[in-house]
Amino acid sequence: MQEPDRLTALRRFWEGWSRGSARDIVDLLHPEVRWSSAVLDRDFRGHEDVVAWLEGLRREWKSLTVTLDRAEVAGDDRAVAYGTVRGFGYGGDQQLDTPMIWVAEFRDGLIVRGHIFTDPETARRHLEATP
Image (cartoon, rainbow, N blue to C red):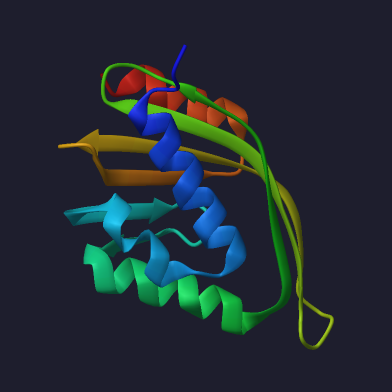
């Protein structure tokens, strides 16, 4: 059985971000993309804003490793990826080791909305609250 396109797209997005290739993921994003980060309590809108955010993460962290554990379909137009992010800053004072759950919504085969959660229960509630 072939993997649904939205799972493939979400995996490609995750892998591109993990490699630090923010520019490589633009073709996966809808022009009206909005990505929300619960970690930063901020929204990023449009290709350039999302790419600038992802590229900025690579500059801010000496090491940032994202591990994808699994991805699954979450309805007709959504997919969810579960993993972990670990990192440390250049000065040694910044450390990160947390679960990461990405909920992606699709339009026309492209990611139009993304939400990042660090708590699986909060991600689950978000999925239940948004049809």
